[in-house]
Length: 417
Image (cartoon, rainbow, N blue to C red; front, side, top):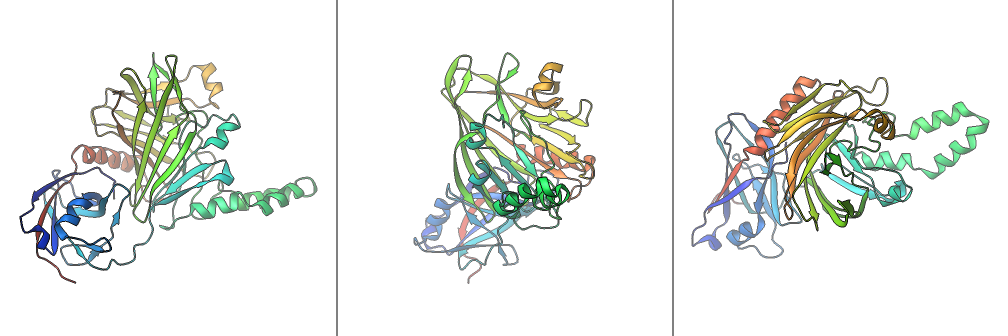
């Protein structure tokens, strides 16, 4: 279920639209491969106009068999729902007034001021976090995205992870036992830590002062301008099918100009391994290279850097024995100029917690535009077991974002409640 920005076209809205009881949505797949549970977006303004909706009216989405499909109306007035379309084929859905069934929350997140202002979010497959101003105030260089592996559940787990990790009573007990019973202190520490797998996943990924799991950054003279932690946060969508957050960052110093401000809008949909992220830089005076980076934790790790087909991948060794492998990746809907491994010089390696470098995808950022890309991961203890399977997933994903599903809307009569 991949979050893709769709090319949605209104095909036939007749003059009798306001008398219509239904809107038929025809979803066309231009690729030969099946598109399973991809999230599509429709304009609520067009839907409302065609159905002549009252302010309090509710709508439902039905598949070809007349069964309800989970849906959500987003902060930017889009109706989203997962669609499945065979290769080189079409599928038909119906939107009409009705009482929606309860939708299980699959994508959600929140800020955790009790954990140094982390913003953390998840869906049924994966989980992530970005570091906040309280961490930056301590002088820590939390430039990159972090991640939490997840398995054995499709339900949200991050609140329980954080609740245990920052439990004040447990932390006080650990401090008390540290001198009198170190073994008991260590056992209690492990029992509450999200760095230990308690059956639903864990944080076994090392970020350090790097781009981490897929942060984008400007470059000047082949030097990455690392972004600090976010400065302000606004959660725009919080489930059940989509999480969206807007992060505004501390001003950057770009060639002596200290007024350049980065804004990111991060979206994670149910069923997707990847976040969609739109990055913009205000006050930037000229076109500059922008890179998306994944940190390397071994100099000769398994990397795919495919600029022509628009994706990069890396097999991360994780932070401890028995924690498996994490398959990292990023995909790009627009052309990529270059994709390559860049290793740190030995001195810089020491400054970056002994990380070895990045695999980078290089593009150009035009002032006033959005740089859009997708980034995320899979874990070999969860649904994608091998690097080959992950590379196929990423190659297919890149093709899909470059060949989006196409939607046409037709007003007319159909299923009735």
